[in-house]
Length: 344
Ligand SMILES: Nc1nc2c(ncn2[C@@H]2O[C@H](COP(=O)(O)OP(=O)(O)OP(=O)(O)O)[C@@H](O)[C@H]2O)c(=O)[nH]1
Ligand SMILES: [Zn+2]
Image (tube, rainbow, N blue to C red; front, side, top):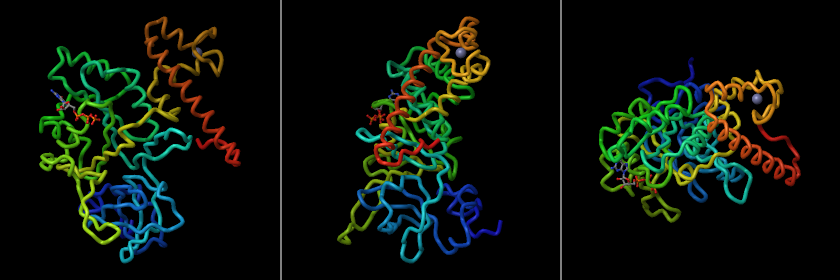
């Protein structure tokens, strides 16, 4: 490819997470524009990382701030820093905001979602399945991190249970306080890779982010801090949401991602519950709910001991919730005058 910003391994853009996926979106009309990566969303402005450092792109008046998310690549004029357009996203972590049915993008272009849980009472298969469904739906690769193994009598039992939640799922026992954590997670934190961290309060997310980000962990609240000019031209220090990982890669840590809920996860459920999904075509009825129907291949699987009945129950609950969300969303679209079909 002769494109000037095609990804090359020694290109600093590659470090920022740039790849062929983005390069292929460029046209001749974009010539001379600089790709930068959104690092923080403020009330009415954004900060971004360019190959040479932090910049504050100028937003066009007609584009709402909600159009952007941390992790996005946008093309700016290198002189004026005016944003020309946002590139299509490789993955989108969505969250529902209470009081509205419009999902909001909590983070974009995340390669791996670290789902953190501790080897204690926090461990909950149903909650982990929700996070897995969210990751699948977003287009990010989920990895389960088990913390506090040092305080558990049988951490391997947690490892086995977590590994059974989805085929091919990576599960890593990690102590977020130990510097070896960075080594254990290095496969997902290579140059140009982007991760995000979800999990309940107290499982070790902040500790892990600080360990990954490295030596600056002594002042966690300043981790990833950038010097910026505020509106009056003064220097201020604000925390970014996109933090550089010491060995390479990026971790996105925002309040929006921390409070993720399962929403709109139909496709994510199919991958998560593959043992159910792949049997459904053999059921007698195409809309079988696998509850009471005759000649149900899924129920047959339960009887044969191939399908865990508790997983089937949790699959049904998530399916129902997802259908409720869909109805709510369609209702909203109708009221707003569009009456359009829900995006799929
Ligand atoms: N012994 C032990 N303690 C851990 C481990 N992981 C985390 N902790 C401790 O657990 C406590 C909570 O960790 P945090 O990193 O604050 O948890 P968090 O997930 O960021 O919590 P929120 O900020 O509420 O979302 C801290 O005191 C950590 O040092 C572990 O593997 N072993
Ligand atoms: Zn069935």
